[in-house]
Length: 390
Image 1 (cartoon, rainbow, N blue to C red):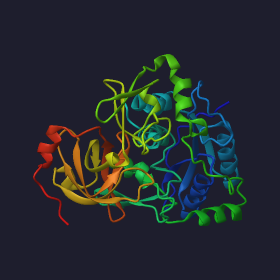
Image 2: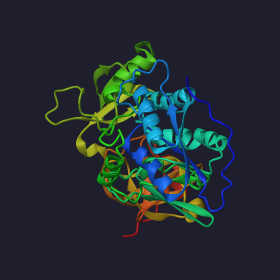
Image 3: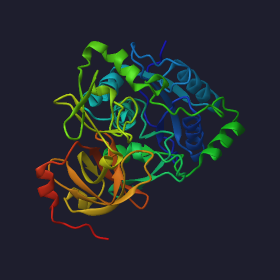
């Protein structure tokens, strides 16, 4: 039987650091985060979210949303002497993450569910649970840092560039950042495992998951077919960039920008998906050079930079996907939460639906979601005649 959260008051002990609710995924990172916070003097309460819906296929032992993860988290909490609770967020996860995931593919975009899960679930819904146990902060095992400055909290990259996860946290608002802690941000992965081994934690050598937690084998096509049912897919045509119909497809959900496999043959050069039109159910293919863009639009923008909030252009390094090294750009905030991103050097496979995250040095200044095309309003707001410095 799952435990219910008690209604506890914050500890009244003078000099004691606040109570923190730590999201425990059953992995080594969140396990060590618990220990680090305890060592610093925080009063720690662990919580694991049960997020798999009843029809989700991913009940594998190694999933962060699976039963084994809960058992591992509970075991670590017991070993470290902290309370541990399980909360059922399956309905919220289904509605806010999985429904978003499927809707994006149906709209011809490539989603990023980890960003949405962090914003809506881990640092959104979980806050109600934190308040229920009298916690003032939520902490996770993310590799990122946050500076709590007077009047503003600044999200920064984690020290380990191979593990930095600030990209996935870009959409957190000030009210979320101000009550967030990332104790692993200044550390590297080998240090984390060494601590876990020294403590004798069962998660010390647990393999990191490299997949979307609810998509078995990272096969999103199989997941969509299982979750939506094949009758939900609408066929359409595959066209070249001149409008010639090359073949039929079973649904635009099976394609992403930059995809090369599974496309009609016959061309002397490799062809790639260069556009997906959800209105006509069309997939457009072209050459590698057709994937290169010098500017693009982002929408649903969120800024942690006062000048950007005021609509002023700013220079930055923009990452157009998690594994992207980043590229120099100018960003021109516009109306209705949109912005134009102009790149110093054109980039390949700028994919609608992915997050474009903007950095100045190691600080996240905000970002948005890559849109399909550029609206005339955004061009006018950005000032088409403005030339990028540098």
